Amino acid sequence: MKKPRNLTVADFMTKNPISVRFDMSLEEVEKIFEHNRLTAVPVLDPFSRILGVITDFMLVKMFLQKTSKKMTGNLLSFIEDLDPILTISEGDSMQEAFKLMLRSPNHRVFVVRGEELVGALSPKDLLPHLAGSERGQRSIQDELLSAQKEILKLSGELATAKKSLVTYKKFFDDSPFMMHSVDWDGNILMANKMLHFTLGYNDRELIGKSVNDLYSHQNHQEAKDGLERIRVLGFHPPVSTLMATKRKEAIKVDVASMVRRDENGVMIGTISITRLTDNNNMMSILRQAAHMFELDSSIKTGQRKKAKS
Image (cartoon, rainbow, N blue to C red; front, side, top):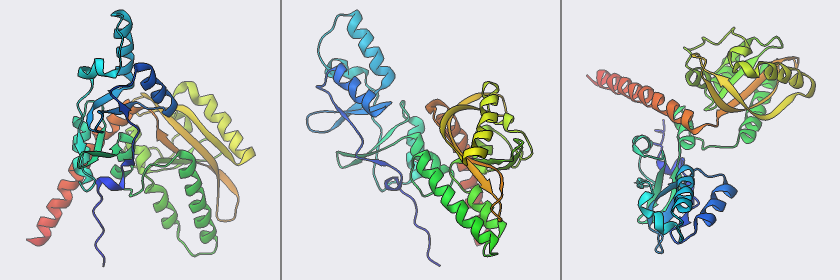
């Protein structure tokens, strides 16, 4: 049996990340942030060496400082305010990248080849890895479309007895994104591991609860209206909303949904895919996952040692 390849930084990094030059004005930097919807960007010198990292909040502080002190000039005038850069190589392990990210003041790690900037890693890049996926981050529309195709395929195979329900459920549970299914009364029929983990529930604890338990109280009517829309149209386009953790803390998410059918093609409810959109919540989840990840690694290492002895 072929041994699986160990995942490296190159498998998950965002290639050729956007950067800014130290001789740019704050106005030029702001336009780059706004146009590309960025939160952190490396700052390069004339030789393309990384001097540090500027964040969106840092840029606001620079504008305020420039106005209050009636300063002129470019980003070079604020070079001492930049966050330090943490770098990693393409061939390094994801475990090493994870440790560096937790140490990084801006939660970003930049990938270099020699002194050349070739990639970047953010919490969004690492979440699929921590969930056990080899796939990079894709848009929620792409992910939902892929899930929909797989679900339709599996549903057809269920009808012809080619696949068991176990296979269907395994696909659902192993998704690196949060997924859940509810019936037309809003009762939760399925909820995968990532959803339980992110919202702070024990495994299978969400099954049988109401869709209202998933969403913040101000979004309950929105969730009810969404069910009706899916029943009529067969889908609900991606929408930004608030989910609720078990502790009743609100977290920002993007959700897209579609109708769920049984093996006979009958509509029996909805299936939804969700991802976090708030970086602060994402880092909180990463920190929780760090403990789980290290604990899981320790258990597996112990099991291997026990097997050898």
